[in-house]
Image (cartoon, rainbow, N blue to C red; front, side):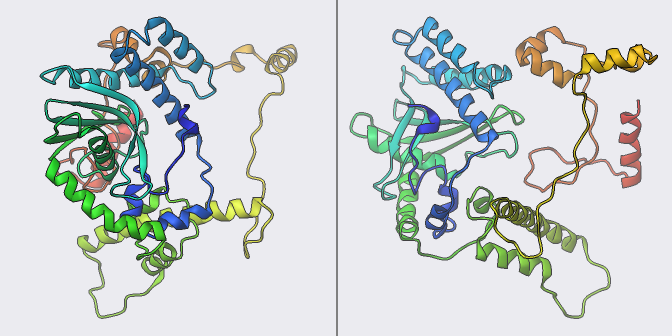
Length: 398
C-alpha cells in the first residue's frame, strides 16, 4: 500500500508526543482535516524510495535490481521528485546496513512494518520504517526527511511505541533484553541520533502510556499548551488553552517594583516566551486567512491580493523586439557563477563531493542567537556585537 494511503490511528505513534502531553488534543484534532503539505508529500516520496532500497538489500531474491530500477523510475516521474533524494536515502541505507552487520548473527528484518501497541494504547498502531531483531536486541530505525527541526531518539515516545509494538509482535519468537532506537535524519547535521534502554524500562513506559491513552481516547484531561505538542496540532490555530496562554505571556502586565533595566536572565526568558507567542500569532493569521478565503467573516480583517511581480510574456519575442529597438543584447542577459549548494543539488551530494574536492571553502556565517538546545557549538571568543557583525559583513562583501 502507498504511504499516503495508509490509515492513521487516533492514538498514533507519530502524534504520541502530543496526546501524551495534552491528552484532550487527540479528540479536538478530529474536527480539523489533515490537509498535508508539499513538505509532507516530499517526505512521503523520500520514504517510498528508502523503502525500495531496503527491500532490495534485505530481500534481493524477491526484489532484485531490475525491479528496484523500474520502481525508482516510476518515482522519478512524481512532481516532487528531486535527484538529491538518492543521496539522502543512500545515507539511510548505509546506516541500516552497518547496523545489521553489527549483529552477531544475521538479524530478522521488517521494512515498513505495521506495529500494534493497543495493549497499551487502545486501537493504537503505526508503521515502523525498519525493525531489526536478533541476539536479544530489538532495534527500531526511523528515517526522517525533514530539515527544519532535528529530532532526538532519546526518550522519543514515537520510537518507544514502535518498539512496544515490535516487542509484542515478536516476543514469542525472539527473546529481547535490549531496546535500541535510532533516527536517521540526513538533511540535518550528522543526521544520526541513537538511544538505548532495557526491556524493563520500555515496559515501564508502556504502563505510563496506559493512563494517558485512556484519557486521550475519551478526550479527557487537561489542555497543556507546549511548544513541541502544539507544533503540528491541527487545532493549534483555534485552541483556547493555547490562545489564553500566549495572550497571557504577550499582553498581561506584571506590576511590582523592579529595577528600571531588565537582567540577562529576563532577556533570555522573554525571548523564550516570545518564540511561542510569535508562532501562535502566525498560526492565527493562517487560520484567519483560510476562513476569509472560504467566504467567512473574521471581524476586523479581510483578504486582498498581494504584491504581484512582472515577468516576460514571451522572453524570446520580447528580447528580439528590444534588440531590434536598439537595446544592447549584453543588457538582456546575466552571467553569474552557480553556487556550490545549487550545483550540489544538480549533481547530487556524492558526485559533487568527488568532482569539487578542494574547490570549496566554508566561510563562517553571521553570528546567530539560538537556544541552548541547539547542537552547534557556542562562539567562545570575546568580541563585541559590532566587531562580530563588521567581520561577517566584510566576508559577505569579498
